[in-house]
Amino acid sequence: MPKTWRFAPHDAAAVREISRQLRLPALVAQVLVARGHTSNSAAETFLQSSLMDLHDPDLMPNLSEAADRIVAAVRSGRRITIYGDYDVDGVTATSILWHCLRLTNATVDYYIPHRMEEGYGLNCDAIRQLHEEDPQRLVVTVDCGISSVIEAALAKELGLELIITDHHVMAAELPPAACLVHPRLPGSKYPFGQLCGAGVAFKLAWGICQRLGDGKKASPSMREFLMSAVGLAAIGTVADCVPLVDENRAIVRYGLGSLVERCSLGMKALLQVSGLGDKKELGADDIGFTIGPRINAVGRLGQARLAVELLTTDNPERAIALARYLDELNQQRQVVERKILKQAKEMVAENPAWLEAPALVLAHEEWHPGVIGIVASRVAEQFEKPAILISLSRQDRMGQGSGRTFARFDLHGGLSACAQHLKTYGGHQAAAGLKIEADRIDAFRADFCEHFSKTHEVIASDREVSIDAEVRLADLTKQAVMMLSKLGPFGRENPKPIFAAARCELAEPPRKMGEGERHLSLRLKHYGTVMRAVCFGAGDWADEIAAVGGPISVCFAPTINSFNGYENVELRLIDWRADAPSPSRLAEATIGG
Picture (cartoon, rainbow, N blue to C red):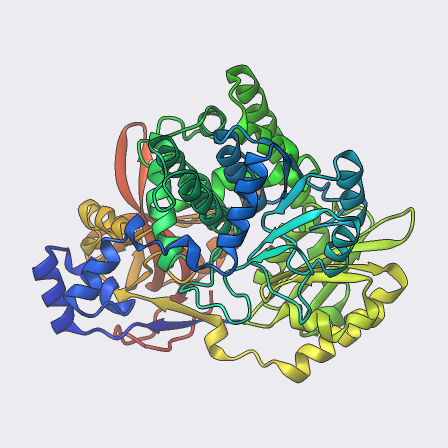
């Protein structure tokens, strides 16, 4: 389906005023105004986001009690076990709390469930094992547990003290843990409810440090720890795709610098093997596309404990070995991912009824359960409908599934409506997981699609590309594009600035590039200015653009491409259309690309 281009309103007076008062290029001022920062003060506040914007940790529901319980356990010499999740958010949250407690000389260890064998979150076998090993220990979850009613009840029955810290969607019934820490608990007055698990863990660590200082301020060594820990929190925040506004923006903005300036041995090794070791500044993309996937790969392939070890080790040789291993696993993950995506596309092509259905539910015996979530996201994006991929076990015919949403559909609500077909499920609006018996998949698919049709309608705005401004390519000077980076970090609810240019000519024929000719390269000429544009995964567009035979309009995100010591502006193509006869801007023009 064609996308709709939606241009932000252009308030020329506000753009001129902000540009003049804050000494910004007009291009940057236009983006600020397009994002709702229409006054000098609002724009300046946004640009100057800092750690001072972080809220007092004691405002978070029950965090004071949790910190007090943990400090009491430290002082009494009890073992503290951090129970984390196996994704990037859980791994970084575990590492933050581990570093904090080690600083207090606590007896601390961590437990990360095996993704394929134990699944997400708390499980009863693990609770029993932890209790049998040390019934006096304190267990603190990070990034999981808020839906673990049965597991928390077992811990309570065994007499195992359990603190749950989480940020995920809550069920109607809350787990009967000794203490629940969550920014959105019923009755919460915490000012910002969208922290990720690592963000919550960072706030808890802050609260612990306060209590071990003078009650309000941490000691100098603990303040230094918190300054480094915000880097780990930034990794979890970006990787978990929470909104990059308010506290999250401050965490990531400061944390990116902390990752370079206060780099641990493990992070330094990971940056080196990832090709980022010599960068003086990191961006959110470096986390989202380089660091995060390597940490995630080890969890997806069942060895998340190694990622925590990498982020906590003080052994240089071990750090290098672990970083290299994570890099190898990420390469394996990419191969597996490409194979699953190819098979998923073939399955849809072979079943026309599925192609016409409002949602996709696909299952295969060869699919790796740790990778299907990434592929589900790509399938949902390509086919523009919610997608659930299920890995089937040959042994017990049990399926483990992972889904991603489309067009704001509440995926967790959809699974709840079809719960009669599922063994277990969990997640949130945009992403969810499930377990299902193989012989229930067809019935689940039918009911899930019916629920979507009855409760949700895909509208034009779901296929919109929001464009900050129409520009001439000549406006995109290196200085202006570098200034645009000051609006970051970019991510959910603060996306990269997107621009459009009309009536671009081809300076040379479009080229396919990369392995399997999967990517697109263009050279565009616009009123005498020539720039390169690339689009990854869109090699098929080359023939379509070449066939137009006339000017095209493009929308894109400008970037600075560094190669062999040279820097130049390059366009990341997002969409295109054959130009209408009139060059005037069409606020809702649809494209055919």
